Length: 127
Image (cartoon, rainbow, N blue to C red):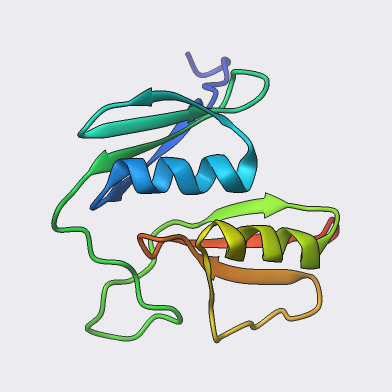
C-alpha cells in the first residue's frame, strides 16, 4: 500500500441545513447536486472525481475569523482558483456568501464565508 496513492474523492462539511449549503455551492461552482436528502446533500464536480458533501449538524458552530482563543477555530477551509477575482467574488456574494472583514492578502485572494459560516478563499493563479 505504501507505493500506491490514495486519491481524495471529496470533502464533507457539517451544516445546520445541508440543502442551503448544497444550493449555495451549486450556484457558486456550477456543480451538479447529485444527492439531496434531509440529513445529507452532495455535489459532484464536472469530471465526476470530486465531491463536496454536507451533513446535518444542528449544533454546528461557525469558526471565528480571524481565530480568537476560546472561540471555534477554523480547522479547514476550501480554496478555489479563479481567473477573475472581482467577478468570482460578486458571484459568491450573489449566491449568499459574506466577505470577511479581515483580508490579509488583499492583492490576489478574497476570504469569504458560506451561509453556514465555513471560510473559503477565492484566489488568482500564482497566489
